[in-house]
Length: 280
Image (cartoon, rainbow, N blue to C red; front, side, top):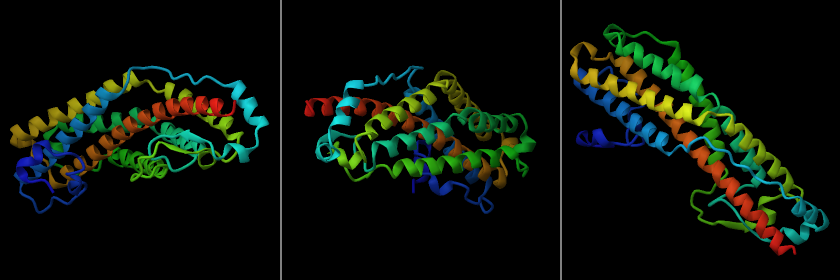
């Protein structure tokens, strides 16, 4: 648990004990301090991810007809012991990982409309109305963003399950990551689908919206800390901390999924080259 003097620079993980916690027993100064710390840390997290999001680009995985034909002629018994590259710590098959990433991208395709826009809408309403921030109105956007967050957690858990966090291995036997020789072609098809879905997300627009939410949160923190009439109710402070956690963690997940998408493209390309050389 971070000390009070560390709150300004605390990470979201360090502030997790503030998430949705009751603030009924706290004095206004403590509520403000807790809320400001969460909103500032969430903004910092979103800023980091927005800076890391690549500019709009496409990943084109070329099909390998020659390898496909070679694998049709070779028995799986002979290929399953070939050592092939994998993403660091990967503990599942390539097809399972590709399908898990597809599910994650399908969820994140709604990030702007279902999370960023409603979160910014609430913050702007509160910024413009001291009465609202001191009140206890249950804005429907709180629940809407929470539903999206809950779905993201399912995707995040599934993705984490594709890796052994304690492993640093970058190679595995072919038989450990492909259930048959024809799986190579199926994985290639899945990666093409993953790339097509990701390319539909307007990353440049998404980056701007992330920064817009970060700026709105920063502006609200400033008025909370400088104007007494903006002292939030314990209810609204708790709701805002939960909202910012939910939004920031989904933005973090976006960054992770984009990284894994690049990783599976690069590693699978290397893998095909390795197999072609070993089956010559």
